[in-house]
Length: 336
Image (tube, rainbow, N blue to C red):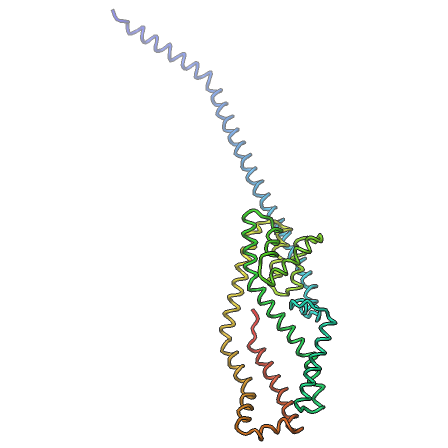
């Protein structure tokens, strides 16, 4: 016989009753565990949010601190550069001789200047120039020509430095990226670079050996090579030493800036070449015309050299021509 239906119903009702009792007993406990889990999740999320906010605040404070350090470094460098500019914008003759790369004493320079002036004065006397004009020739030879030569050599040396300086910075950047310290990169330039970059970086190495910090030694390079590019290099080194940062990236950007400045100077020089050619033609016209007149009528033009009136007119004309050439030079001389 099969199991009676009533027995099955009784068992089913008993199971439902036991399930209901167990659910009633465990419901509160399940709810408490769910609430605890939610609280723990909320607490952990708050903790993580707090850590994230704290890290963000720390990064912000660190960035503000670095910006403040950089600003203070720039202000300090600006003050020091102003003090240094007072002595560099109008350097003494002794400093100009050093910047020109001449290794001579002032006494020797003065003796050479006096000898040149005396030689020119003797040549003027032999050529038949009047005694009244001999002191002017001596003055020009003793004071004008030597200083013009020093200024020419100084300007040429600065140009050679600017042509080689970006390459030297690129070498330092490669040395730093390969793991070498900055001092080794500077020593590498002091031993392998072209002149006058090698000499200027050699002065930095000598200053370091005497105990001068690297930023200060780099700042001194501007005294012997008064170009903005040398000041830029010293400022980058100074800021990196005080505020930190990626030195190779900073020097790489500086190299790009220096090359862009050089390209701009070349572009300006090319654009002003027409004006320079016109100035050269205008300045050369009087002596060329004088030479042509001498070829055709020598007696007519020689009156300027054999009479006092002619020599006076020649001197006044020379002064006015010099003024005109100086004005044209200022008009076509562009600074970048």
